[in-house]
Every structure is written in C-alpha cells, then in structure tokens.
Image (cartoon, rainbow over all chains, first blue to last red):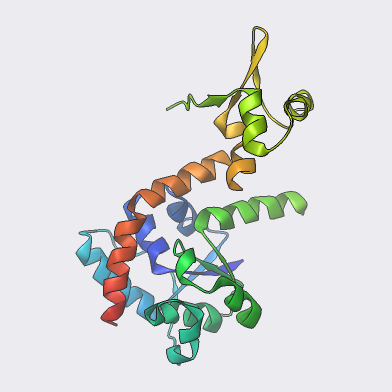
Length: 131
Length: 84
C-alpha cells in the first residue's frame, strides 16, 4: 500500500510521537511518498516552528506541471500536493487539511481518495478484518 | 492514564439516535461493551468511539494528539507555500 503524505502530516509526526501521523510514518507496511517541494516547504516550517528533528527518510519524487492541478485546491498554493499524489500514482493522499482540497473532484478526476492519518489507519484495520 | 468518561445507556441512545431498548439489546449482544455496576450499566467512551467518530478509540486519541498542533502547522505551511 503506498500513499502520498501532505507536509502537515510529516511535520505532525515530528512534533508528537504518539499521534496518528507518527503511527502512519513509522508503519513499515505503508510506503510513504513525498515530493521535492514537500521537503522544501517542510524545512521552512521546521525553522518557523523551531523543530530540530530531521525529516523522516521517505521516497521522494520530483514533480512538474503543478499549474495543471491548481483547480483541485481552494488555495492554488496547495496544488503541488495534489500534483505529487497524482504523479506518484497513489490511490491515497493523507492530510489533515481536508477542507482545503476539492475532495470530490480529486476522487472523480484523479481517482485519489483523501483521508486523515487516523482515517487511513482505520481503513487498513477494517480492510484486514474484511480480508 | 485511564479514561474516566462514561455514559448511561440513555445517553448513548440519544447520541446514537437509537431507542434505549436497542442500546440494552446491543449491550446484551456484546456489540456495545458496558460495565454493570449493581443494577445499572455504564458505557465507557471508548466503547462507542467508532460509532461517534468512525475511529477506534486509540486512533481517535492519536488524531486528537496531532490536532493540538495542527493550526500552527497549517499556518506555517500556508506561509511556506507562498515562498516556493
């Protein structure tokens, strides 16, 4: 199972090691992907919030053509996350920022489901029970 | 730390939009875990977490932990994204 993780999840995992973000990031059964832009913005946020821990080592893709995705988020500055999820060819985008993405349009056009870390971990638990 | 939050069957019935009889049936069938104390039942919050939040209680608490800081993180990210 592979997912694209928004930078808010990556930063959350650095702040608390008992939160759902940390549980997701440290789950070895889930392949987590971020982008080159995610790393750049996460480093800026780390500085602003005085976080001294290093970013987790996650598979990183280089994204392009971000403008193409500007209609998938309320704020066009969030578009690179949708671009990352699409270009990483994942089915799940994990974020705490549900309100800022056009969830239905992303599901319809890109077949990507947006969930919070807890929702995704719950989904995995229920999937295990169904299997 | 042990969570001390508990509900009565009537409170759970109201929360879940069920009749009290249905809640007692669910307790008898083991679908809602409840502790009998004398003649009454008390239902811990974690027993009805999934019905309320869609999350198991541990995941609910784990998300709650992250959400303590999420506003500061989102604010910082908004600023960072203008600098990309």
